[in-house]
Image (tube, rainbow, N blue to C red; front, side, top):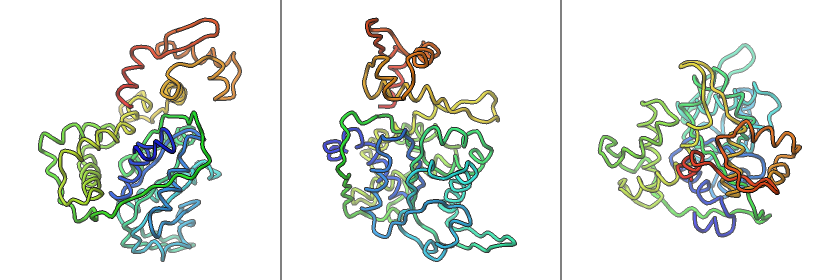
Length: 328
């Protein structure tokens, strides 16, 4: 994390999280607004992993030309940004198809027009996703039924304040394969904080599975065959990017569709990036009028305190600061 933050400030934790999920063979949704470094992380990870494959779409038809490559696959699949797909249907099907393939390690689809068979898939996946693209997906039935429990979401909440055109380089050391690392006994008290983080995103059965694999991945990356307390501590640090989901996804009914709190996340990113900001900074970042900016700030009055009037200067409220402390 430190070496990445030296060259690309703010990308260290997200990059380390992506390395962990890749070694754990999970599917990662890297969620952040445009220009926050998603593509840099995805490209750097792909460059560091031999045999990685980049896809533009992963519907059943889109995977057809790659079915032989993906059978027995042991590397990384990347999708640069879901926003590049032209329809919500393609985005939902792409996520559900890749999530299912990664979880079941195979797929078998027969229609009147095509036959798709992929077996022994043991790959990982990283997919860049903008919040505005993810918002309609979490409202669909396919999110709860096919995607949420089979993917890991990391919410990157920093805008680059000193952008660089330099490529991000990730140096991944020789490691022990995750399968060779002994599965930890998650009933032991030392794992309770890690399980609490995982419970934010997954049902109880998936919590045990995903947490075990990611802890084993951290041990393997450190050339060990047993998980120890250091892996738990690092998972807690990296997992802060997962916790945010409990603050930005909500719903009105126990079994109803989710809502993605887009403006709440956008303002949180502003406070995390700048600490405090003026109305002009908000307008410049989001390309909106002052009238719209003031209206949004008024709707989210509990999030901020006024630090100055000429110009309007906003700082986080005590309640929002507690959330910021939790996630960063």
